[in-house]
Length: 61
Image 1 (cartoon, rainbow, N blue to C red):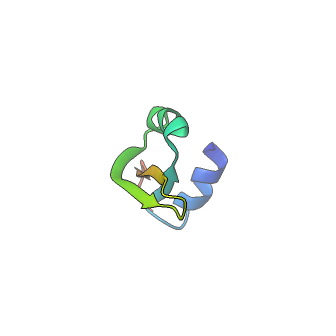
Image 2 (image 1 turned 120 degrees about the horizontal axis):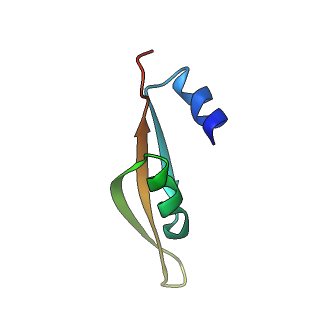
């Protein structure tokens, strides 16, 4: 994860991800912040729920 985030931060000031609820705690521990809650209704009537999350670079580009 550190390597991937470093690669993104070389070009952009922030990382944006869609996180499943089971993965959410891992991202929170890595410094990501919850931005939005999303809910998509599926054809079967169930819902796909997730958070969009963001982590900003600790340094200036």
